[in-house]
Length: 381
Image: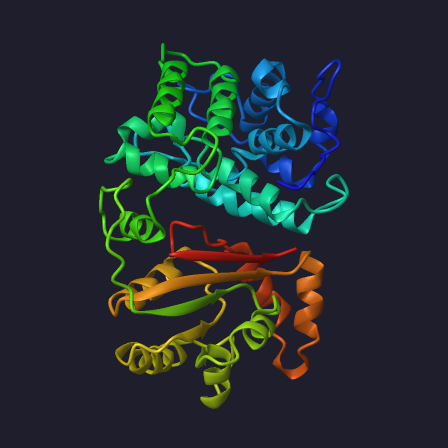
């Protein structure tokens, strides 16, 4: 990862946690007063728990021995690991408190905070650091709950493609230490089991290795259990799936790198059908799929050019392409900063997307990962 320093990360020689300064962040204020289930969090609200977790993390020798950028990434992961709770917390039927989906929501919030930056961050972190932090938040509960999943190995291997599992375990250890439980629990033992499990799966500090890109694709898309065996690659042609927010530079990439390939551009179809970006897009999507089907049937390489910012949208398209034995390549494009994105969008003149729509899309952004396609190209600065 490119180097990045967050000035409030505890540092040598005293490793002190500057909690009062951290609480001046507007985005941490919602944690104050957000209560938790007292069975597992007798320490109090989410802010209290977060302070305890960050303090315990700063005491761990394993964390102190990381390089400065890694320490920053894991610390930010701990600082933001429950950032989604104020937006998901609810009272259950039996009167207890739960926060369903808070890690997924938290990953979106963490990505937004880190990309847009603020006076404390000074400047947004590099893409790799930002996504590592967002995924530390997304998978923060995995070391404790992985064994309760229907397919523990598949869950852990998928996580390893997006986040360092050893850093995840380190953060989870601090999470367990930074709480006061009213009952005996085995959470620290579960984290120790997780450490042993990622060792067995050979995905401690790097993504799980597959025999080939096609084997990896089939593992995540067809439920194949083979990892070390190179499956026969029956793909016959390639589809490039573009991904990125409006104004990111997708059209420029296509013009520079795939101008000789047919391109299905949803923006172009939208113009042809006189459909405004703020209106329902089903007619546009259906026309795009109709054109794609003709190219898929003829086994013609082509580009599908649209925002495709959510994993669910990409998954639907990738399944569609794979039915015709297409090899899928995702190209994700992102400008250096969020302000650059807004400037590029405005430079499109009459074709500019209203800023409030970009804001909404940015809040839902899920950059693609290598589990989704045969090839992933990240065109980021």
